[in-house]
Length: 518
Image (cartoon, rainbow, N blue to C red; front, side, top):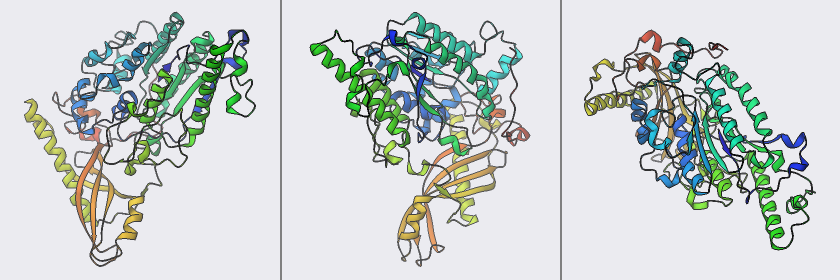
């Protein structure tokens, strides 16, 4: 969640005398086609806060040690969103309800010290393995090592920020609040929705010029579900900043009647132009609701709001091999309706959901098994290499073998290309497969394989396949049982040392979560 209070010279004119019940409401802009990137919190929040993509090869090192320097390694500090906000005169605030391996743990001190203020955090154990353990810690100790009082962590965080806003109504503020919720049940969201509603009501009672623009978003959707790629992303804009008087259907007339009559000359023209630009920006934002966008675009949008100018090339990512035509664009500028996933920075193979993958696999069962075994060999080699590198005993990590190939799917656009291009003997075409497998230790993994197929006779069933690259190997089941026994600096997602019965458990969709004392 990000909060941004616009500087007075950039904001649309607002007058307290015109306050009404309607002006205390929020204009909500839901981004219906906002697309999360492949991976978890870090893979999405790095683009959101830096504009650069996260190197997934660093993910094991991150999970093994919660090292923030691993996450932000190589990223210029002048690209960090909070530093850009400070450059434009904003007071910056950060808060988190738990550890996420990016910001919010004691290992992130270098980055936390760059904020003007950090919300007093929970007293978390140094290892801080997972949100599950944090939750258990709070229940078992009845809050003795958490916040003082009976508030839930999220309520403590939101109340602190509201009070911060009330005290600093005279300055622009940028705040990044990270509210942790369970990854295994959406019931956990009910623990924070009431607090969020109360918080928005509190913000609406601030003076009009002090009410922030709120970006309320999930970094990604529920894992292992279709909606994992489609998180809730909404921009909430105070209605007090968007009076519609004078808007008679034309964007150019909006805002003029809100300028006091005693302001004349150049200043009046400047305010009129700012009002037009601001209203046009909001019109563009609403237009872009049904345009594919991503966290790269949100980064550019927040920079646009901070400075009042489209950041353009200053917000661009490095060239991505799997999204060569990507260009980050501010959502305050009008985007083309037919914008593609790759133009938004989302690789073609990760685009969409059920329509993107088809249950057809050109590999026979034997071929699927061979590719899956190759992927697991890389996992076992990764653990062994990490053990030697960090001089720890990796023998507690069981060898991971293949028990079953659960599914093999082909990316729909490449499936269509193969049907067209492999009709002649000797023709070649590349495609990407998504394979899910169950291992002998009870864990499930998913990975993608870039493959090259050569037609032998012109028939789709008569082809030779070659694996060019394996990528995005990711755990798709719980690895919590491994966390307590994994040696330091090894990745619990790949060190199978936990109880196999626990590793084989799968969470129920409607699993209820315990309720903390109130």
